[in-house]
Length: 190
Image (cartoon, rainbow, N blue to C red; front, side, top):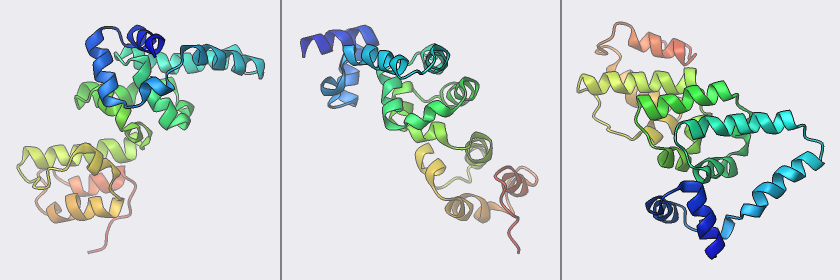
């Protein structure tokens, strides 16, 4: 257990980050194994996975590191959603930049909600964020739902709760039609 705590300290830096990780990721000490990381890379190479593919994975992980993510937060996402690594490094950079720099979410929050990073960015995330921001600016957003709720609700629920009630009063001309076209939804017949 002591070696795992020391390794955790190496991954996340200062002691207060170690405490944060232990509070946020219960059971982490039981799954953290420094030797396993190296052995997994060796196993990939032994099974004929070319170094350039491993390098591509390293590049994708490096995108997270460039935004200040700890290895523990990165590996948490990979463990929860391994298919996430099929996305390009460019897409990962765009999405992480949007959630962190434009919306202000922390690595810890995003690591605990990795589904955000897999949603269609142009067809779901951006249009919904734009609608909710507009409604909030105009004091029309009475729901005050969190981002997780807004992004994970079905299209029909989002339309019912955020688009249709404000269809005639949305402050941006044709925001209703703009949302429908960005989200690629057929226009609803009156």
